[in-house]
Image (tube, rainbow over all chains, first blue to last red; front, side, top):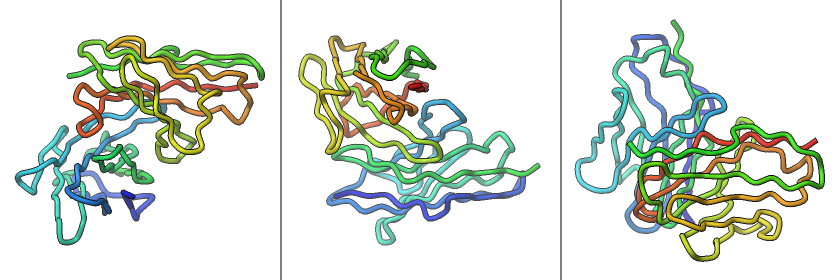
Length: 110
Length: 116
């Protein structure tokens, strides 16, 4: 069975500082990895994905994620956080079906 | 980008009644659509996967007779919650994929169901 772990329920960071939201996964075979963001009472917005190729993936709104096969991680990063980045972030893995992590609430403090 | 809509965005119904939620892919043909349920401050739980023209595949523990899914066309899937109970109150989110489950899914804005 495939699974995703987001070890931090809450991440706080000051505006302008770099941010990292952690994700580790477990899957048989090659993983397809995704990051989504959810604003209150809204659906999920796609940020980025890793299917194959370069381990550093760049996505929407200045976010990027690095696929690390040896550590089975796919951490989400942004060099300079904005208050508007405050939201709930989900890591997900496929290929059998999209399995989501428990989510990490990111709060960027002004 | 690909857009998925859901209707209604919010619905309140009485116990014992049925509620239908529509999910539409507006600018692409969705070969596969997914229905998720999300409880407050929790992750999304996949309820079922549907392919156009065939029966939906339900996840373990999801009652197929209670949560009826119809994927009648490449742009429309419906979820009907039959004989709703207060414990069915939740946030229901659909998603659609043009390439099957291996690739990115585009999510609808969600439907908040409250059963009184």
